[in-house]
Length: 386
Ligand SMILES: Cc1cc2nc3c(=O)[nH]c(=O)nc-3n(C[C@H](O)[C@H](O)[C@H](O)COP(=O)(O)OP(=O)(O)OC[C@H]3O[C@@H](n4cnc5c(N)ncnc54)[C@H](O)[C@@H]3O)c2cc1C
Image 1: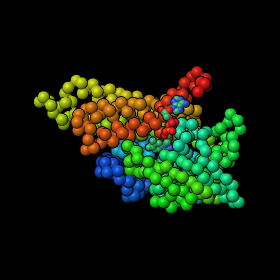
Image 2: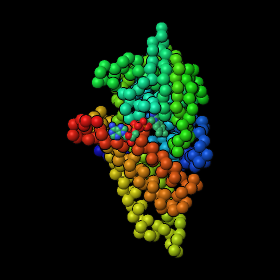
Image 3: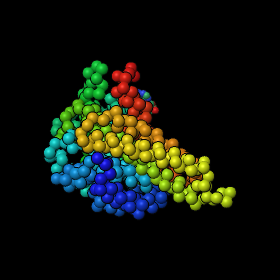
Image 4: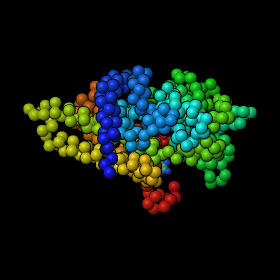
């Protein structure tokens, strides 16, 4: 069966057109000045249903699968990875299997409409790859919980309408540090941090369009009904949606690599040296051929993983493979893109440098490349020592 059905091709083409007309001009202007993704762009994405691709139709979403989600993600990322990441703040931030019916009807419809987008606060200063080391605590206080402790790397903490946070609610039994973690839903005012939470943006080198925060929680009060799923089970929830999250990150990497390739082809046709377009030189032609080949290999693996996810097959190894392969590929391809642009590539006047900075991040978040290799090798060799 062909992956790119007629319907998927239409979805892909619509997202491509939207990116070229609406996302790219905004990204080219705002990324160099570290501006924020504007509300009117967000509204246009909402009109197209992009925040609800994975949300069931009965809650106002498009009720589609990971395949369509990743096709749209790839196209948006051709323009600006941050915009491609924004759609995850509706769609998949909380898997609907984790929510009870009351939470679903309260939140999912607004999420699908793009009116209610979230931030995810899992990482801490001492809990990055090792999320079982989370030390932020939540204590029961009557009909609510009080959260205290430090979080790090919370993207969109200010702009979001809600925050998902993971905190320790009970001591873990010896050798089982992943137990005793609980997931909470914090509703907040857009543009502010929740009461009982203060923070400051971290000075990052890319992924502009929104801010990434360090946060300090000091008795932040959360109603008991805002626990997501079962108390003590957050580790399982955080890891259960990872296959789709990794496919989504691969899609982001593939999209920005494709953006770098498209720009490099256009630039190499335009730029003349020694009386020729540089695209006449074999050194440049072969770079373009290598870039395109690597992108297509990653894309085909992504299609495979999406199909496995959409047909309910286990594919944790392959999801790690595509995340690893696509992000490593994106760094190489965008770097070659800069090389093809020569000095122009080392300025903020061409999008290729944005794609290069953002590609670098895809190797770090959603599980670093080393963690992906650990998962893949553990599946092939059995669990390692460390
Ligand atoms: C811009 C940005 C935005 C982010 N947004 C969010 C967000 O919104 N919410 C959120 O919760 N988090 C977010 N993160 C955090 C991100 O998920 C973590 O940075 C990532 O998981 C890595 O953790 P760390 O930075 O603590 O690195 P570490 O875990 O300290 O890793 C450092 C190095 O050691 C390696 N390493 C660690 N453990 C092992 C091991 N067992 N075997 C081999 N190598 C290992 C790593 O691969 C890496 O090379 C964001 C990060 C960035 C940079």
